[in-house]
Length: 378
Length: 72
Image 1 (tube, each protein chain N blue to C red):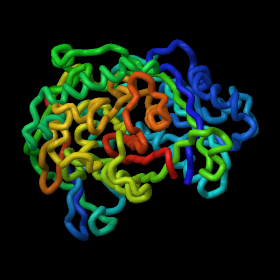
Image 2 (image 1 turned 180 degrees about the vertical axis):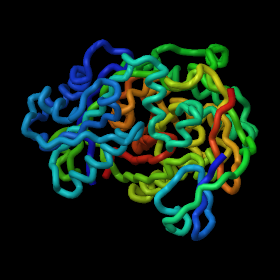
Image 3 (image 1 turned 90 degrees about the horizontal axis):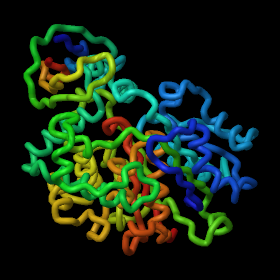
């Protein structure tokens, strides 16, 4: 078993610094304390080539941190890069190949115009599908329509996810958007893709988050409050959307969650950080992961179940929706939020009785997913 | 609109694969399947670079598979 023993946070938002400076912001708090023990570095990043004109980012990051000789790998799995990096870090320490893995999640994407960012991100689609001109948010728009039609969910129930997540994000000092929004403000914001509005879709963000992953046997030599990765699963789905039966269930998410829950022995964690690139995705993922019955996730949002003080808090961090979505950093930020919550260090957004938490990081439009159950006790 | 049909099992797909996902056959014919029937659509007002500024994105049925296309 592996454990997370430290986390470093950078501010998400539109940043003027370059990508190496942004990466160092979250990595340095860890390397200052644990430099001598780190023997492997993973850099979770998707688009340094497209956004920053940089290749070999992992080696540039280790050099910038003066860890020149350490082995390092850049992990790219689109929006799921962070989850894939966590999965790899856990595998490295569990196999004995590494003893202490620094995972740096970073992306700098705000310098490009929105249309260019949209084109770059949609490059993960199949050739003929891409030629039709979809954006990733547009797929969420299609999903929203399918979901509302299939399950009778009111339009406002999707927007309530944005109200909740912005309220949570306002309590998170690392969040991109720290602004409480009313339902009227969400519903009155600009249409991005019918029916979804501006505040229902994650912003274009820069930022980094880092964590340190070690074997459970040595975890207590790093901290008196390690957080154990009790179960972790990864699963994929066809990249081609036209080969999928439905949008309203995400099989990769469901299978990854099943593996993580089975491995951990925790069927119902106390809270979750999900991949709400758009509001409707948080609801559908919460159903695919088995937290709510199919078609009833929207009711949980409407009833306040997923609020920080509710029975099953989701995205206490603000989620991608408010915290931001610097793509390579997102999955690591989710793991770091679960780490903070379990240690009781989440400040005003602290979830009560946070003994076990799940993070679920999704690539593309469910092209793959990593879910991990993390907890205070092995 | 064209689709790909597996010559071994007849499975149809909008996107080309090297291997049929149903029978693992490796031979496909490309054929005309007519016009797709719309199932769900959404109007985009923020679109990728290289495309018009606004259009309707549609998922429809096409033969025994699905298609994605846009309408201005």
